[in-house]
Image (cartoon, rainbow, N blue to C red):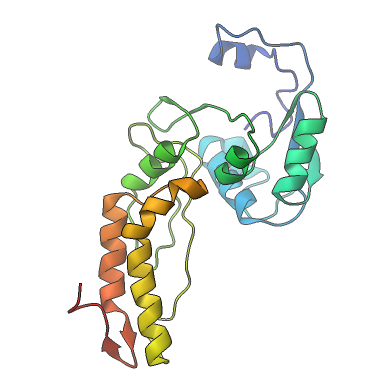
Length: 223
C-alpha cells in the first residue's frame, strides 16, 4: 500500500529490503501504474489495500475508480501492462488470466495469516475456500485467512433472474450453470480461471435448486 500511496519510491527502500533479505534490489525509482478508467479490477485491488492499510482506507479508499495519490494511468489491462513493460521500475495490477497469458511476472504477497503466497489458480481457489457466502453472493474475498490463500482475489459473477419466464431458455440456462460449476470446472484452468472450491459449489447448488421456470423448480428433482 505504501508504494501506491507514493511513500515508498525506490526499489531498494528499507521496507522492501526487510521483506526480501536475499534479493539484490536496485536503486531504481518505482513508477506506479494504475487504471485510468473505472474497473472491477481496481475495486478488488483497492478493497485489498483498504483492508491492509489504514492510511489507504482513510485516504483513497476503495472503488471502481479512486483518486490515485501517485503514478500513471492506463486504460484497461492492456494500458496498465503497456506502462509496466515500457517503464523501468514500474509496477501495476491486472487480472491473473491477463498476467498469465501475457507472461507477466507477479508478486508474492503476505497473506492474512502471515504467509508469503504466490499468485496462482490454486492460491485464488484457496482464498475462496473459507469465505462466508451470503444469500446474494455479495462478498469480498480479499485478505482471506486460509493456508496458501492469495490476498487479492475475487469471484466472477453471473446475474440471473430467480424465476425464468421462457421455459426452454430458462431450463437450458439453469442446466448450463449446473454443468459449469461441475464438469465445466475442468475447463477453468485452461482459461486461467480458478475452479470454485467445494463449499462454494455446494452453495451454488442450493441456489440453483431454488430457482424456477414460470414458478416451478427445474433442478430440484433431477439433480
